[in-house]
Structures are given as C-alpha cells and as structure tokens.
Image 1 (cartoon, rainbow, N blue to C red):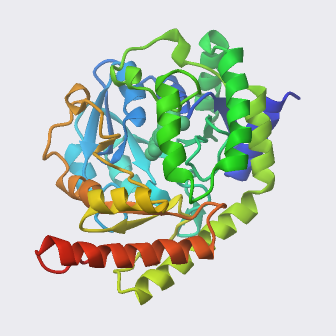
Image 2 (cartoon, protein in one colour):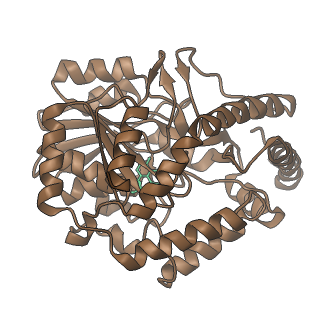
Image 3 (cartoon, rainbow, N blue to C red):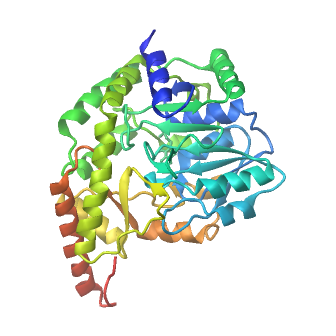
Length: 394
Ligand SMILES: Cc1ncc(COP(=O)(O)O)c(C=O)c1O
C-alpha cells in the first residue's frame, strides 16, 4: 500500500470513520465533500461568521452561497438559535466548525439540521481529539474534514483530509477523485519537505512572530509554499485547486499519528496550566459547559487592547496569535466579495476585536505559559496606565 493510502486508512480509523481521503489542503477536502454531496448553483451553505476565508472559497467555487451565522461568546462556535434563523428552503448544508478546539453544541446543531432536513458537515481543522458528551468531534455529521497546515493541532506542513462513514458519500468522493483529482506538483511538494525540516529546527515560541513575518514575505515572493495567497481572494475555480496529497505529506502524517496521544495530552495539560496561571493573574478564565472536553489548538483569551498587545508581544518575542482578525480571517479579505457586510454577526465581530490566543502546541511548555501570562499581566498594566480610560480588564 502506498503512503497516501496508508495515511488515509490510519487517520480515518483514528478519528472514528470508515473512509479517509487525503488532499493537498483542508479547503480541498471540504470542496470534495460538498461537491460529492451535490452542492451547486443556488444552494446555500451556513457557516459561522468567525472563520477562515479559505473555508468560504470552496462553497463559492461550487456556485453556492455562503450564509453566515453568528457565534456564542463563550465558545466562539455557531449559536444554534442564530443557525435556525438562517435556514431557508435553499439551505443544503450546515458547516459546524469547532473553533479553537471547543466543540460546537452538537445536540442542538443536529436537532436544527434534522428538523429542516439539512446535512451537517464538521470542520475539525482546529479540533483534533475534542469530544462533546464523550463523542469525538467529527463523528456527528455526514462527513468531517481536517487541515494539516502549520498552525493546526496535527500538521504535515500543509494538507487536508475528508472522512466519512457514509458509503454513498464515500463512493461519490472516490468517483470525483478518479475523474479529476490532480497529483501534487513535484516542486511545491519538495519545497514543502524542506520547509518541514526548517520548521523542526528553528520554530519555537520565541521565534514564532519573527518567523511568521518572514514566512509571509517569502510566500509573497513565491520562495516558499504558503498555505494561502491573496490571489485566492477572488473565488474562481482553477483545475490546479483540486490536488491530492503527496507521499511526503502522507509520511509526515503517519509520523504525527504515532505522536498523537502525547500531543493531545500535552494540549490538555497546557489548557489547565493557562487556566491556573491566568486565574492567579486576575484574568477571567473561560467557564465552559461540562459536556465539552476540548483539546485546544490555541488558548483563546479576550483582551481589551488587542492591537497594542500583539504589537508589544512581537517586540518582546512572545508568541501571541491573532485568529480571527475579522469574520473571514485574515484582515486583508475583501469581505464584500464573500457577501459579508459589517454588522451581520456582531458577537463574532466583537470577538475579532478582543481575542488573542496563546500557544499550547508541543513546542510550548509551562515555562512558555508562565512567560506569556507574565507578559500579558504586565502589558495590560502598562496599557492601563497609558490610556487614561480606566482599568483594562482582560
Ligand atoms: C477553521 C478552518 N477551516 C478551514 C481551513 C482551511 O484549511 P487549509 O488551509 O488546510 O485549506 C482553515 C485554515 O486555516 C481554518 O482555520
């Protein structure tokens, strides 16, 4: 069996599915599911107004309309009430995105979907190993997909996987791949292999901000394989889009699977460490519903002065993430092209202004957490002294 097929089988089994289909990126996996489900012209697909624009592109490439539903403030996941309001006779699919690794309220989401005869697919790009009422995220809907891009809980540099246990859907995805899936071109696949080596050697919490700037610059110059480019902001289909996974990515995935238990245990531990340290430093620690057991991709935290906190963190060499900068991340997204008007999802828009996220990945440890929280506590004090508008409460 070749490496890609071995990875597809091993990954699917690990996330509780019968079938796995590996792709060049997560967005391609989403596209394959939607297309195999027959989503096309005139259909509507609902997703949270707090997402990555590359989750919206596949919908538009198929000629369907993305419809954005607002989120809940505590978990950043779609609000079932808002979801229900967005259902119309044209709704074909609900995308349940488990944001930051917090599981959606799947009972309520599945209930809305069942009452309206709409299919659910799960975006697990940020949630590997999270459970809702003891059941793994990714096993509730008709299908689920994962991204293996650098920042994700499980990474092969870039990459993606679609999984399902529905035999009809699996056959439809298989037929689609037989007809039109392209091989990954050799040059980007080789560049990606080199990038994985550089990443292993040089990227640590202290170097991340600097490396991210350099990486974006190199991507713009076409020197490295980036996960996204601004050229993709105009959702137009090119046959190059529908690419499969390369053997190098698959081998990296198989290696990652061996380390997965340790990775998930580390992320759970880091969440507890941040809960404790942030609580001790006087921050509001997220109060989560008891039925969810999240494995976080990053630890989200609301701060009042996000922009200044991020700038100060870059100067201090503290890894502070900015997801999501706008309802359709990143900030450069021309949102009108995607049908998003300001004010559509106010809870999500507020979260974009306030939420930073802290590292919990395998290269961050308790020392990183202590340094990060100390930085946040002292920086927020400085802002409080400087802005003259009263205390800056996180
Ligand atoms: C929630 C979410 N879904 C989907 C994607 C798309 O994944 P990929 O970059 O592998 O295409 C991303 C990308 O970052 C994401 O954050």
